[in-house]
Image (cartoon, rainbow, N blue to C red):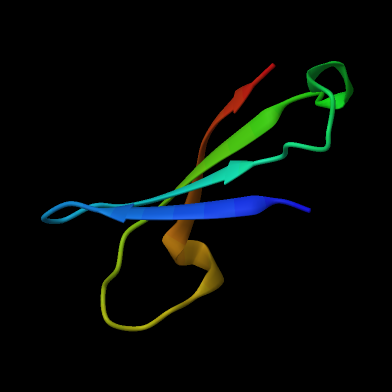
Length: 53
């Protein structure tokens, strides 16, 4: 079961997940997204930044 950690600075909220029961060799990649809040939530507010392999 993933463990979620949330930290906040002045203008940044960071979400990180830990997967303690998943061996590292089973994780193929990580997808990194960014979200900029502008008043109304839409799917297009999320932007894929990178894929880490």
